[in-house]
Image (tube, rainbow, N blue to C red):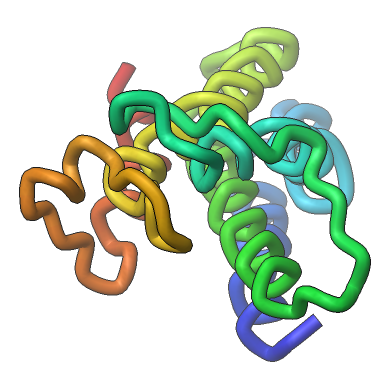
Length: 167
């Protein structure tokens, strides 16, 4: 892992610590289960590997979703693909973790896992495709085709993880 992937993964551990320090003893059972060492991080990475990366960067269908590259296979010779996958996977996992802080103590664990599935498998990858689809060549996402510029990824990264907090 490069320094960037390690730095991007660090919010996972920080979120776990914050949940432990902030929430009352009766809530300690739930928030730590939702963070890095367990469920949401693992679920996010698995979903992003299986189809999130394909939805985000696969061949575009009318600028809406990617349609190729499911169950990403990397042979180790394409370092750009590996780095891009790890970089985006960390943001995808962070998107799910941010939601955990907003719903801690207010949502049952199963409902939280369903939310993680939706954010990691659909919201972040599809919104990412709209803005970044076609980054490696091919048809652009519909937002990018209309001139949308996501400076340093701030719109996709921030909005993709904060929208579910309001729902």
